[in-house]
Length: 234
Image 1 (cartoon, rainbow, N blue to C red):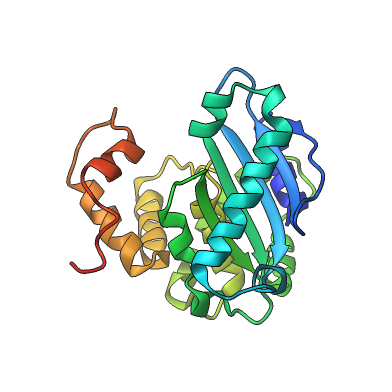
Image 2 (cartoon, one colour):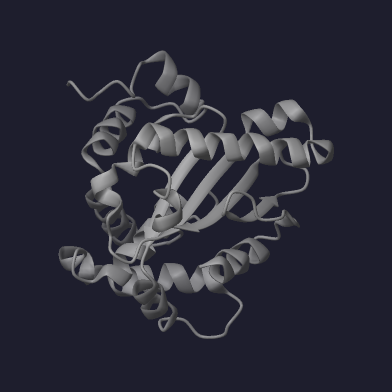
């Protein structure tokens, strides 16, 4: 998975900062020169995540503590305020037994404290099958888009065709991986794919955001001001 992320970031011409592994997390740090957006990828296994506890809050505390330590190591390279405000943590977890759903790790994403958080789980077999859909061409983002559209018939069986589910999650969980198409029907298909891949909480939040038509909106401030994360009881 690390190799795929590296190819995507390289194609987008991101800068890369070498960071040593920390707390059993294999790390990658990407940024785009001239922009204040920073992306910290942490690769691990579900066994490492739950080694000390399966409690969601304790896992989140572990991740936040790790990010704080990493920030201290790299702070001399960046403006502290921009790093605090614009850091995204993408945790990529190999989960061969698919036990993540029982842990409710997606709830960690709802808290932007320390960093915006994205949790992406996968199995080695799904990743290997996904890789068979590509050639050695450097245009990996174009290939990801093409495979997504050409196989959109698998939407109805996404729980069975799990390699395709992984592909969809890549577009949802990696902030700088964007879908592109000139065909409106393909855009509509992707919309269906994404909505069907969301949790109930994420679906509710998504539909609430659609009510408001403001291209200049700051999503984080908007969610906070409108209390949109407190939707469990609605």
